[in-house]
Length: 574
Image (cartoon, rainbow, N blue to C red; front, side, top):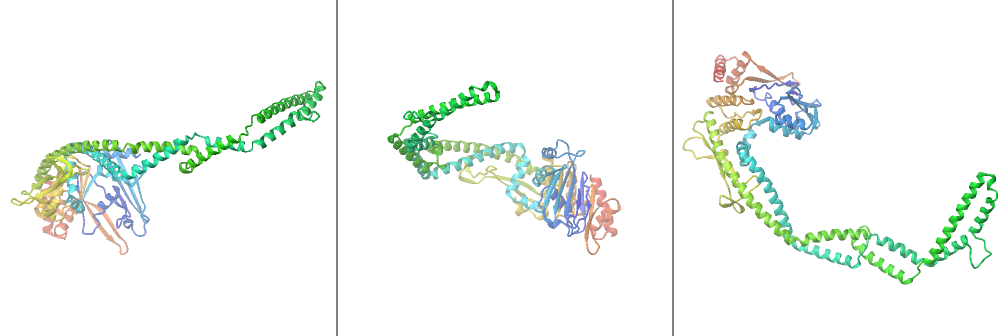
């Protein structure tokens, strides 16, 4: 993982190898750079305050080795990323202005994808995560995660039925509470449809009537014009001496016909004049027919105008486009809506039956979830209790209370109506009895800070056997722990590291001694700029750091002896 210009960190490189890695240093030395950088790589909030003053951006780069069939690798490839020799390259850039960019496998991706990959890559635990475990909802999620498919399969079916029940309930409430408004809407639709049906409009009828009204209103003028045009073309029978167009064209054609054989060009013109004579005769005939067929009936004009008035009244009320076609479209939509409104009673019956069926289905699924959780709770509590015995809490006893709250409007579970939600009807609470004779109490009330840290670690060790992730990061979860308990915490972290990569930010030498590798974070200051660096501790350097952690002085003879003893004991234990 490469970190550049991140807060007080300047071009630091942290190599997190498999096994157990402890990150140590003096208070305020920047050990949380590992937590911060991983948080950014896994889609955490981009804070421009992380960028060093004067720098343009902070960059975090990670190289994560994965199996090709690992869920994170599959999801990354679906987003267009490519593995580099079995490793997934991830980078996150945060500008000084607060803009953020993410790249996965050489492809620019939304930051949200990093969050999706995080669930399959790293489990991060710190003081805030311990507080999260105090919430009942998180405890239920932890139990469900441990139970696996026994809960996951019915929970998926339950969630689908629950969402459908919510949708049915909303629709049913809308229909019943808006019955009056819907009845009024139906009455208005019936009135409008009846009014349209009484007129019986036909598509395009308004345009045809408008054209007919225009023609009937000017019938005399149209007839007079047609007759005058006909006389000009074909002659006036009442004036035999008058010259018409047909006569003139015929004369021109005869003049050319007598000489057309002497010049082909003139023959072509004669052909064209002949065609013109035929066209004039055709037009003259059509004009005569038009004048004879023109209907100047005032009664027909009155009927047309009356029909147009009826259509206009409809278009004003129902035709948003001002046409009969728009009126017909409104009628079609109104009829469909009226059919829907008239079917409310039938729909209410259908929805009520579906609601009752879904509630019965939810009751069965909720009971299945409860049974699975109760069974898993017994196994989970026993496993965590066993782990606590190895964490210097030999007499502690963990139980998990799976209960339901009665609700007359709820679903039936165990023969009684109980409240239910999107995750079932169960309330889950982790209880701790720290010593014999103590009553089990919620861990929020019954556990000290050190005990809570060990409970969290025990939970993760148990999870590692049932649903492992490649990497666990613990940020000072050993706070409040010391002495023998600290040794046991280190031992259990080493056990967890047998099946996963474990990174621990710690102040405890008893924990650091069990690590396969120890990293030291140190600050340097040249008077103007503070920088942090990372050093891999080996041999004498590691003994000196453990001595400092034990006694506050790395050259203390007794502290060195104690540090060597811790390392030897840890190696012998492993």
